[in-house]
Image (cartoon, rainbow, N blue to C red; front, side):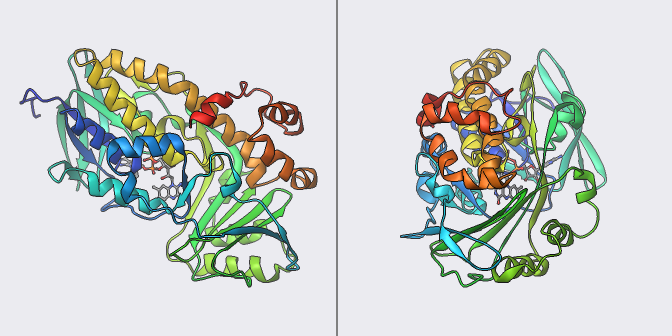
Length: 406
Ligand SMILES: Cc1cc2nc3c(=O)[nH]c(=O)nc-3n(C[C@H](O)[C@H](O)[C@H](O)COP(=O)(O)OP(=O)(O)OC[C@H]3O[C@@H](n4cnc5c(N)ncnc54)[C@H](O)[C@@H]3O)c2cc1C
């Protein structure tokens, strides 16, 4: 077991995703020594479509990575709704959401953050925690690597290890206590080029009750595709080949050109994302000297399009709070959460609301999408429209001032 040897505080950051890298940058910025462990054998720079909103932009600027994050929105981009017969109508894209977000690939943000990480921050790949114990003065973590294990002592442990966080499981409890399934699956991949007769600056959505397909164009990169569909049996979706499950979700009817080419591309893809849509709901994001940051704590879901922005904002604020409370780590974590939680609650609520924007549940929601999109800008219409959306009654009132700040 190693002892805390220097006067600099040591933090273990679990996960080399955007949250983990950003947290390590923030901690180093306030004079801490972060060590990052990542379960994968190397960096994970993949990912398909993310957006950066104002709160994420401000945090990225403070972390020193904003200029390295490209905006890949194509000039004069348009989004159509297209049906299987190939009929196109003017449609709404993510660029039509409030606050005109920057659009990019997740890997763009990962690379920008990684480039800003000081070279002497220790990173251990293929390493994962198996035990976490703490007392008032520190946290002991057992880390597994290459069949062996080592126990080390830290001042703070940050679980930045994503939706199915091991840190959360070890310290707070099993996944099913915290993870709420939304009843949707997503799949995404990079397309070899424009599909279905679209040109390189054209995006498309193909919307049917309970299932949708989106094509996102980029200025200097092949488009990516997102499939999103409703399911009553998430577990069954994880059996068999993902591409076959996705194809089955779109039914036996002829696909038409756009959907057909996109499904073929998913079938042939070496790299893709396939997952259920879930949100963690927790009463507290820290326990003593262990804190969760990013998707492990508050994953708003892909439908909120806030994953990256929230990750950067949370990591940046964590650094500030620890800096301003140098002698009281647990107090700093509580103050951090108190400041952040209203925003993340709002983003999670947005994730629930916006699933109908991304994947309308029925024909009525397809028809009402333009009104629904405007409601995301206008609070009055937003309140009136809430009754149209099923399953949102328990969501607390929107705080649109937070959205505009974000
Ligand atoms: C490969 C990948 C592709 C993605 N693509 C998209 C996309 O196209 N669109 C989108 O909206 N969002 C995407 N996301 C999610 C998006 O990155 C997050 O919502 C957001 O960036 C917040 O990320 P995070 O760092 O909190 O979690 P994540 O991005 O999930 O990162 C968590 C990291 O922790 C690591 N990890 C997990 N368990 C352990 C463990 N036990 N020990 C050590 N390390 C562990 C993971 O390997 C990963 O590197 C993707 C995530 C990943 C990992």
